[in-house]
Length: 325
Image (cartoon, rainbow, N blue to C red; front, side, top):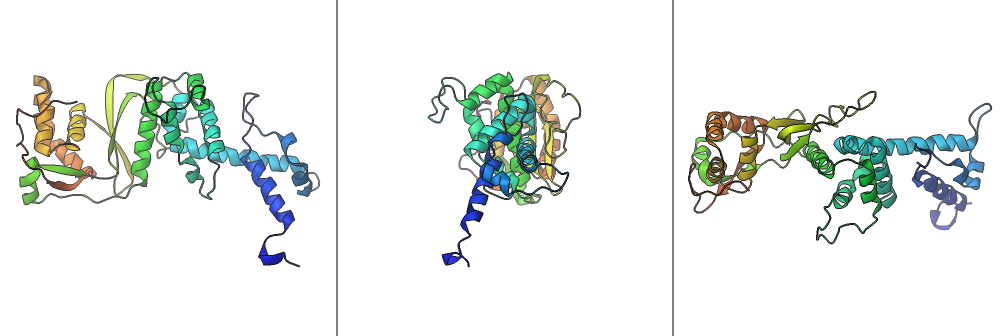
């Protein structure tokens, strides 16, 4: 006879509760590796599991499921944040993943949903001492302590996180098509602000991090991981969505500065501001490459149109434009 109101029977509710509690229990890392603790499994749950002749014991079968579930969660987070995982090492990153999953247990069938909120929490842990942000974690925060134990430079972890976020944003954004400016739009270009694709973002790179792409699978190196080297000078990458998928493009520092300025100023003012901060050699390089850089931005879908002319916009080349911040 079914329970009143169609509710599941008590034994089934208890089974679901115990099984969920086992799966959500973090793996133990005290022995130098992540492992399950079978002795902590509820006895009544283990007693309900059946094992075949010669097969694993019921607790071992449950342990395999428990372990594989957490490995899949770790993999989902490593795949979404491959550069952070490499910057900190997978061992320390998995500890952060465990902290995140303990604070925000997965509640969706899509394991990728388990990654939501990880970046925001890590940003808080990476704040500099003395930051006035009220969301700064308290002294002794487990996330901050784990980042310290990794011995990874905080600046490198911050860059890795920004690049992983930029790639994820590009991956999840729609492709908005290619903008082919009309003659009328080209005539208004100097006095208008450009509209950027929602997928487009820039990220600086001082360490060799960009190659660890979740999309190319480069984070799945075999054998001992190579050390992450620091570049002689800062590089800039543009992450965006194309018709074929997510793109990662290394750009000239001058083009990077122009793209940054174009988010704030009409194109003519942005160009003048960049040129104002150039050396003579840089100014010559800017003029020589400008047409090609504009063509690259258009062909890559970074710009999707004009946001509109702004009152008092100065023409290209104005000497009154401010320098680069």
